[in-house]
Image 1: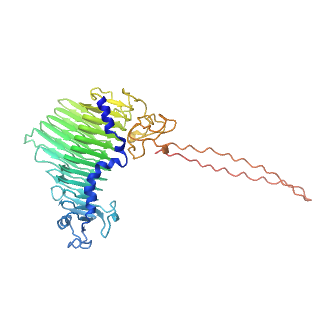
Image 2 (image 1 turned 135 degrees about the horizontal axis):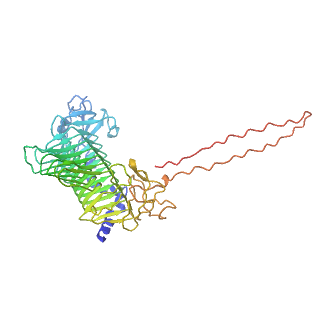
Image 3 (image 1 turned 180 degrees about the vertical axis):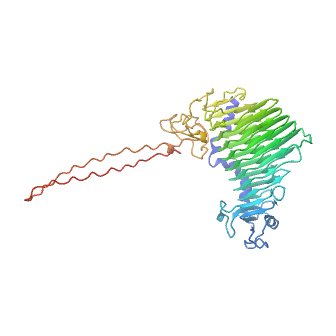
Length: 546
């Protein structure tokens, strides 16, 4: 295990996960795309359905189509697009920046209101990719939908390009193929570098249904939401949800891989959510459904992500059925930190062959490094479910994490687990087997209660923030290891502000003693009426657990 320990030290450097350090891998590309487009100080070309479609130099003279604006623009220009739906497909030019979210009349980008003014490019009338990319191009504040492609990338296709998307929605696009493989229902990038920030990729499909009259021995569908081939993919603050890869009918072998994302190359995700994506394969000689959330041949880095309710399904098959990696399927290396994998599932059913489900949470052939993460697989909200990690032909190293049971010999060839809370126990330094005391695990809230044995029970090294971006480590007095450098196990670090606020001790107000004052008079001395005791006012402060 010396090799695994060395890799853990190399891969989980605290500086890498600092608020500044986590952006380092993106800065080089961002400086050439976002900053580059701003420094050129090019012209602004306007698009609005209310314009007169003449010069595009002002809102009143704006073009009525995005394609017309692109034709008029040159490298470094910005194209401002007013809200509305534009039924067209567009071919970008290098170093153009397209911005949506305007109502018309704005003079500054920060005057946009993206939540109210939706700018949609709808390719449903074109039967092709909605957008063809170009190097240095930026899409910001656009909804891209309705793409139908037989060549891949229903919403966006970029080849040999470096592009970036920000505040975009790539949704409800579709890709199929006239050949044996289909790629990228929402986005396809080939030999490219693509960055997505604060964007949504949802409801896209990559589907290939073999025709009974054609004998195609192998059919495949890759990347329902995003497919990146020989490319680098960077996602930050993104949601990838409800995308599908689907292959079925008749072939000897069927492969459906990467319901949310499929990549051959490098994938880096920071603060992203992968939810309810599916890889599905059905009815063939042998069916393989792989990577409901993410499928990758290469390297995956996940920081501060949530991977939940994804699935790899072979619901019905005539022969052997293989489901591999409901959450993540990886051939290569995966590094996971400050991440929750929860309720991911593998399901297979075979009529005449084997039904083999492996790795509901993670299927890895290679090296897997999991740090400060929470991993439970059960589809039915059972907080005491197994972890369901399948790892062979490489190193599995887990630190400072909370997982379901890993006592499945056929799923884990070897593992180096330390300072982790593992259901039913697992050998390794600092490991425990206790109720982690989550806040509300049935509803996906894996924050630690103040009484959790996972507080201050981890190692003295790790990332400097948790999944919510809150500081790590935090020493809770009287709990676990005392002093600085005591990390919690799991994706969430318990904060001192989360400690329940004790109710104040009531103060008893004594009734004042009233001494009658004697009055010298010829009339009899009157006994004064006692003063009424003031009503006690109590204020109860309740500590709020966050």
